[in-house]
Length: 60
Image (cartoon, rainbow, N blue to C red; front, side, top):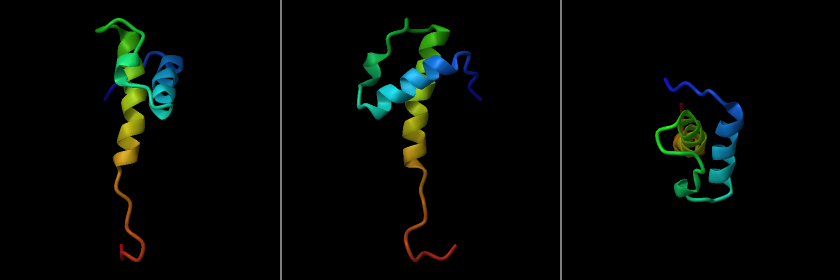
């Protein structure tokens, strides 16, 4: 489980992903908590998009 220290920075990362910015747009120093929070926001959007949903007409 990843601990996010700053929801504001997490949201910045999420917004960057939604806006189509590359992961290299992370403005925080590598290895910092801020960078980790930004990356968590950025990659959470990606993970949510990869969650499979049942196809239309598929029985559950």
